[in-house]
Image (tube, rainbow, N blue to C red; front, side):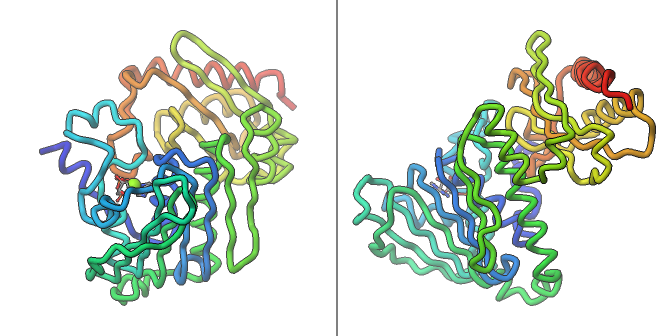
Length: 328
Ligand code: ADP
Ligand code: MG
């Protein structure tokens, strides 16, 4: 029951950024190589995510919108080894309950194939109708909270909502360099990121997402000790326009906000640099999936390491070493 509560707890749909996150994660889970996000009015009017992933078979279309209809786990035991991002089977159902949602998908190679199912609030049109679509899936979420005025009232300005959505996009784009990403807002292209996994390609992507200044004043780190591997970029003190929010830490590809991690990073910076600087970094920690529990919380921004001390010391010493000879 504890596990069951954990996976059903938490509100999926709190604002447009949360919707976009779930849709992008579904696209990644479907092995998409290209993901396009299109937004109008900060996401309040439209959030559309189109991918070229596996698609959904006609017979599974309606089920995809029903609660706990995940295709990603069979039993709770599977949760132990879950590697997909979504596993609760409630995102699409929750989103469709508070929006006008249409799901168009094609699991076949012929672009003349494809089907669509639509839902408006709690009422779902039972029919699955033919709708041509290239292999992959498009989900359109219109008029978020149209039927829940209380929640709509909590939406902030278009600018603020889009800023949150763009941040969710950044995290996804920084977690999958092999995927081509596009973000458009009110018909203007905000980000267009070609795929590429080399260090140079990664740096180009980071520069276009976080600004050239960050990457120009960052130091590349790459260190492995036993089964712990750390790679990425840490900002240097010369990067005076460092922003507190430019802190990205991924564990096995998932973005994480974790106290143990934050502490190790802060300690390393404090030890090496003079004070008053915000640490800025894009870091990837890869560990054996057996020694980390990523399902501590349904939104999965927290992790629990089996040996926290070891991870802490590894992070601290790696960063300390990397920063030590950059002292101004
Ligand atoms: P979950 O991701 O937790 O399984 P969701 O509500 O997000 O639950 O999605 C429900 C189901 O719909 C998924 O398990 C998957 O089978 C299908 N689905 C959703 N989005 C996509 C997509 N972009 N491509 C392929 N299948 C999808
Ligand atoms: Mg999902």
